[in-house]
Length: 446
Image (cartoon, rainbow, N blue to C red; front, side, top):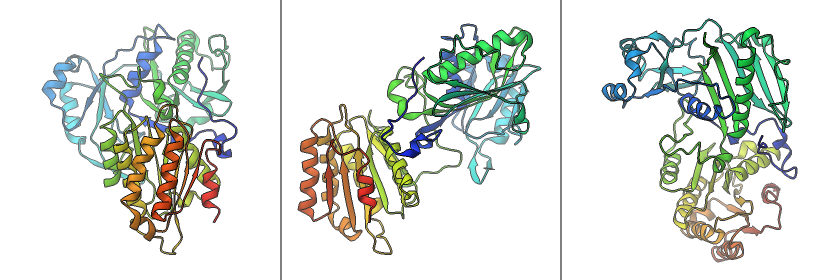
């Protein structure tokens, strides 16, 4: 079994928490079921999933989707929204044992409808359709992780009331590195009777997929076992550790149907976030931006998804989480031009309004030691954006702290140091011999 991604002990203490939320990204149920179905047969050969999944959006043409999925005309159907929120059954958003005509009526009634989930208002615009599976018994299984274990949570009583019956859920820690094939899982689970072998094999295989594909959370509630002892996941929620994307181009990045990380239900992007998303789609590199609060004082421009988590964690750990303005990253050796556009967007945001109390604003340009990203080229893009913004930077009282290593780092760091002296902007520059997050306490000490 492959090891889990983890950060070295030298990093901030908050990385010892059970989860690093910033590195987890939810995926649609459609994507989760496809990924699990494709990978689970490697560890559970008896998994014979039907594979019949269809997605309906406002742009869907019924004639085309029925032609692509002829089972929509012949099978009894189940449908529900697929937009990263749960309790759909309790919200009367679940269609079961339906015909194609019933499905069309359901979609016509629900599509475009506004609803409130928690405190968030959103619009229904994506539905998952699959065959309706008759069954008598529903089971619950989920997998989470802490620092030392992957943890299997299992119950004989799955379904919409599992939370109300949480005392019936078994919690089974599996120490990291355990050979699950030789682990006696059956004795840890409740009595499953004649279904024991198939359920144990299914859960063991599921854990291996969870580890191998770098899931951060997986919940199947419920799954059923048919009369033919076929396991069928009925409802599924999952999050992936998106910092592991580079490991899974063959599975997450399937060219016919790549996994996407959709926005949360009801979430709307600012014009700047939309702009960075549009640039990101133009390049094989990664450019990400989330604005947490555009009025705050601490801004980050961090190279690498993992490093972005470490920097954000360090800022929070030092007690400045309330001042963190953004979260994001640039990685994958972006071009000078794309890096300049990304940097310019950040600079425009942070200099939009000076701090009302006259306090300095901080820009942390950080990262680890790059393997192949050209530090000189990316820093040339940042320097170009800085030169175009000198008056705004001075007016907003911006101070810049830089730490980076990698190919052409000496030349890249010199560019940063020189532009600071040229423009009269305070820029402190540190190379690979300074610990990666050292610039954070240096910047925040005042």
